[in-house]
Length: 74
Image 1 (spheres, rainbow, N blue to C red):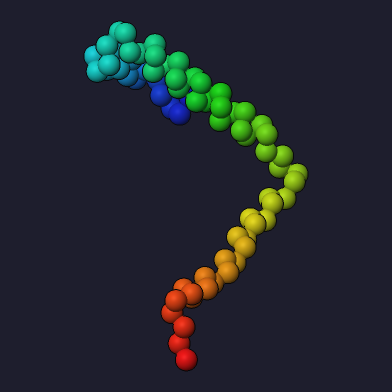
Image 2 (spheres, rainbow, N blue to C red; image 1 turned 180 degrees about the vertical axis):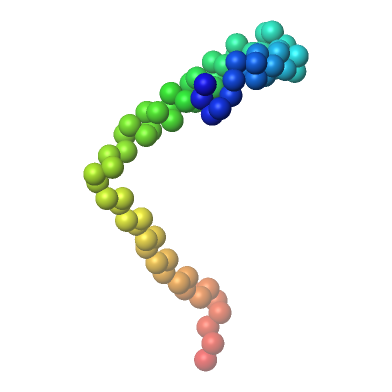
């Protein structure tokens, strides 16, 4: 079994999930988990390991604001 989890541990985990979330919520949770894993797999597949990571673009320096027009010092 994956991660060293045996059959009995999976049965106990399933029973606890049923007790905590109820029978109506467990399919919804499983569906959302499946969709999340699918999105992660797509993102990993899009990354090409042969390409070097792109350099992060440095933000352009912001010009300093001009002093207000009515505050002229001599």
